[in-house]
Amino acid sequence: MIDKNIEYYNNNADSFFEGSVNADMSGVRNGFLKYVPDGGKILDAGCGSGRDSKAFLSEGYDVVAFDASKEMCKRASEYIGREVLNMRFEDISFDKEFDGIWACASLLHVPSDDLPDVLQRMKKALKPGGAIYASFKYGEGTTVRGERVFSDFTEESATKLFEEAGFEIASRVVGGDSRPGREAEKWINVIGICQ
Image (cartoon, rainbow, N blue to C red):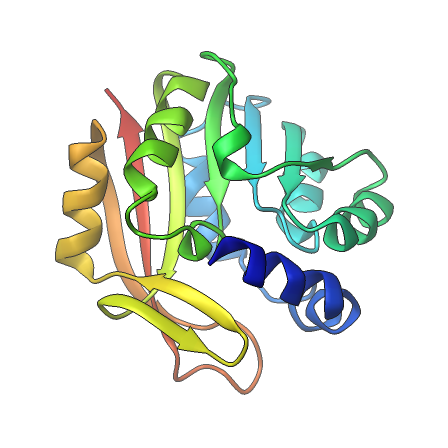
């Protein structure tokens, strides 16, 4: 599943960058930053265009960004003016290093069977009390949209996933898509606190 998605982003990096870099995520970012200390260290996990890394950096946060697509890493690195690591979620091996993890529209490409392990890796990467933000397309189960495969969640299934991984749910909001022309698409946004 994941390699097919990486191939999609490598082949469509320019159009994906252009279509996502200006999406207004400020409201969701600000909600997440309530749980991150000023100047704290954030892991932008599956950073895509680098849009949110750039916003966090401009607000004085220390950011480490990565993406599984080499082509997206190139564009994001150029956009934010620093190296973006080319790695996958299963490569995460940080230990109590981050105050927050931002996984905006990225964990949704991890097969649902693999998500518990990935969330354990993310929990280990967070300092105690650290926050994780993740967003998924609203629905249930595995879906194919175009050339990409997604793991979809509802409020209930997302809560179960994060609580079983040892996170306390701080926020769980269903909202629309911030990209023009896609406002009708529903997303589930979750913020969990590392126990």
